[in-house]
Length: 467
Ligand SMILES: [Mg+2]
Image 1: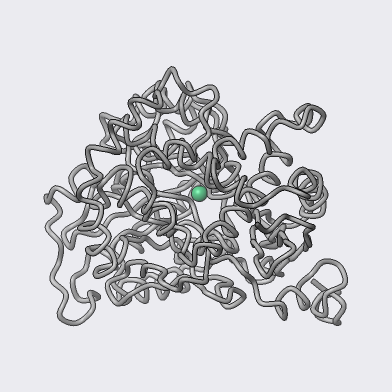
Image 2: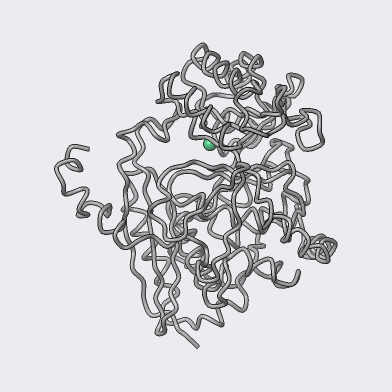
């Protein structure tokens, strides 16, 4: 059986700060970056993985990735694949590396990159896309693949098993359905803070024409500004004249849209503050945006502040506005507490801030038990490629529903991936079907050569030096 013999790590950075892509109230100057790893074996088999950062510090993550990946050298791949939960524990339990976490910060996102690379390798070895590998697991195998330490007060393995068995017999129906119609998505690219009103209006019209019906706008720098931009977006998404030809408005009172503050065409607006406020400030600021009828406020305050989120949710409930968070929740225990404290309406896991697929499965299981829909964070670079797999696992094998879920889609940087994600004419993610694409995160060698920091051809060019 193949053994892991080594790895390559690349610090890849894209100059997105030049265009204002990705700008929000907290992150004003982002160079979307990938700390990228390829695990090598003594056979043809490889595994690609990455974690996401927004520029400086990506080199520090790459160093941590090397430390974590070192633990896998010499291991038999089939032994690792046979119990991915146990493998995950092994990756987490370096007695010295643990001190610089545990389970948070650089070391944790680095572990995410390596765990994801191992899952990619596992899927490639079975010639299935990652989501298909996992949904074909028996309930026992799926439970065995998760990260279980520290969460048994929220969900036990036995409860998880019961839950999975209840929907096991209908997995094939759901798989067929989502292959046909795609997975619901929403669009963020129209509402970056660094864009002009004209650009926001143009991009919103384009997004409506592409079939999207959930839209997200960045807020938090200036309330009057946010209100003006929100009204521009609502004026477009609520107006049936912009719907694609032959599309009927969705019923805002339908089961799928209930509680989402959908407008007359069934369109939904979400807002995202990227952690800028204190708790009382968040409550006051968001109340002031009630007029634009957001479904939820995302990341209103510090990502670790579980009780703060709970307080905000309680205060905004009478105003019909929910709370979402999770892209900066650094481990499954934070999600556990958010769920236990009834602090969130929507759970936004990040595919590589959590330490890879195994820890994500734990959060999917907890969210399903607590009845909170998972709407993964995406965008950046590579995140959209990853998360469609996670949402398919959630829908087909774990929660059994996708009707109220929406998966973030941002149309940036997909051209650097060999098997990029794609959106159908109804604004939904297509299901990845290439049996050799694993976790869909393999980057073109040419992209790595161009954008590797600091010696890639782009960064050595006059343009790169200026950036
Ligand atoms: Mg966000």
